[in-house]
Length: 338
Image (cartoon, rainbow, N blue to C red; front, side):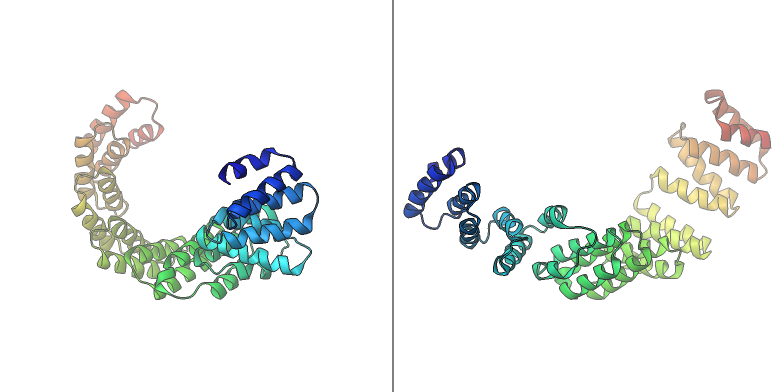
């Protein structure tokens, strides 16, 4: 039977059906052979027989996601309502095993004005439902996306990842307000450090500093070693106008990565924006000592020295930089300020 199944696609439809019929007498539960029989009937124009054989093949191999997808796509536009219902069942089986197959089905059969309702029965898998809702959001139909998601994905900790996926779809669609709301509702489903961090980022995009601060603070308490939590907390605190607390958050981040030049530059820049030039100078000097060619460190050091009234030291730093980079516009501007 295996050899017959491999050879069948190369035969003409009549010979293929005879060979496959013989193979199925030996192995009657061979779903692939039944599928190829359907293909042979399709090739000779007998669509009624093809429908029956494709349905049989789908019944024989319910756990074979690619075959279920093929059957679903075949039956999707069948004139017989019974087979359209079979197509939904096949699509559901495919998506329960491989949610990513939804993209292929949508690519083939979705048009911008399509109603949502026919797709709902196939979305019993929360990952597939989240993928569908995210797709709808990206096409601008975010109200229907929200409704479809809420109808198909329960507020259950086991499905927290589906909530994350839908929130990401809203973000990609530019629906930041809705994204933030979904992130908060996801936290009611399951609270963890990463989820709070994602919610904090969503609120920062909206410049809702208090909500961002609340979530970032919780994330940093749940997982004190989570570097991003301290960085997002610093952003939220600075947005609120709490610069000193933002410095504290960056200092906490530096405790876990004391030699990180990017973190030191960030704290130095925050000191500089607050006109706290002495600690800014200290951070910039540490960066430049470790990385003499770090432009942000060198120019930041020169600006902070100038801000602290140490013009000659600033002149020495900027002249040294311009000796290597004579066309650096920002460096020239700093020198002109001297």
